[in-house]
Image (cartoon, rainbow, N blue to C red; front, side):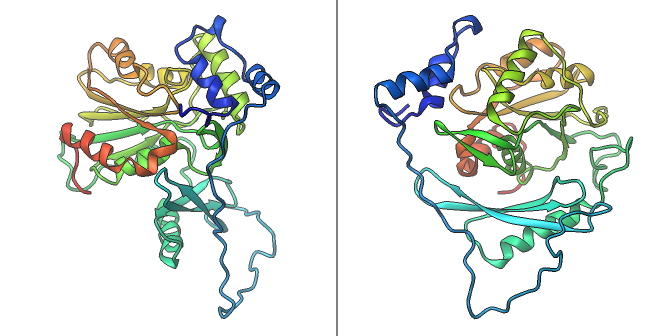
Amino acid sequence: MRSGAGGAPRVTAELNDGVPDGERVNHKRVARVMKAHDLAGIRLRRRVRTTLPEPADQKYPDLLKRDFTAQAPNQRYVGDITCLPLPEGRNLYLATVIDCFSRKLAGWAIADHMRTELVEDALKAACVTGPEPQPGAPTAPPPSPDAPANGAGRTLLVYFSRAGENYYYGDRRNLDIGNTAALAGLIADRIDCEVYEIEAADPYPEAYDPTVTRNTQERQANARPAMANPLPDLSGYDTVLIGSPVWGSRAPMIMSTFIESVDLKDKTVLPFVTYAVSGMSGIDEDYRNALPDSVVRDGLAVQGEAVADATAAIEDWLTVNDLLTRR
């Protein structure tokens, strides 16, 4: 942590890193102590306008007339652009498309500009997604036509991610796409794979603190949170990438639900995580202990705030594991 730059959440995270549950300090107490001593974190962010109307452009009518409801999937979309500041001072821009029926993310795109192509790419991604699957339908997409008949060499990318309020350099920010989902997207863009997202049957809160509380309770109870979506059939895959955030120096308990519910015997498993301050935190070793019949390789750990700037680390990791097919 840079001296003088950490707010109460960041200081709390540093103090609690690797500390047993019974000895951890509460962020509210840290905030009170800092306030009593006139200490505060430095905010280094600058506001970036993402709505820049062109006076000469044609004004388009509001086709939805402020009615953001829909009777079925893929009838009405709404979207937005969010600025993602990078450590070196430049910005990336995230365009998102939300389905008004499901209220879920239908498509997204990231670029270093806010030109029309950024929004077009997000809309194209939403169109590719298509209608939501019916209950009981398989979640993972079918294999590509040129995949070997016996499934040899196929790769599955599995991830769990949480959007909403997230930790951000000692502060908080709201994300339309969770850090791990963004990292999974960057990885999937560079390899040949199918993608499966783990979804909780009981979704985690949008707010940060209630999520921390629930995670602590699940860890203490050694819980196995239920998954909402059907499990994938792993029989046709040789390699499985498994991604998650690091919560309390461990993978969320729903990751244990997944690995205990599927057959990973004789598979090559590649863990990847996003974190705030803890790094990989031994999660790849946890998977080795839990999956003695699998080959678990060293994982990839990317700081959540820096996912958009992690291309080199991602490509190096994929190259070492003989998975990189495009840059």
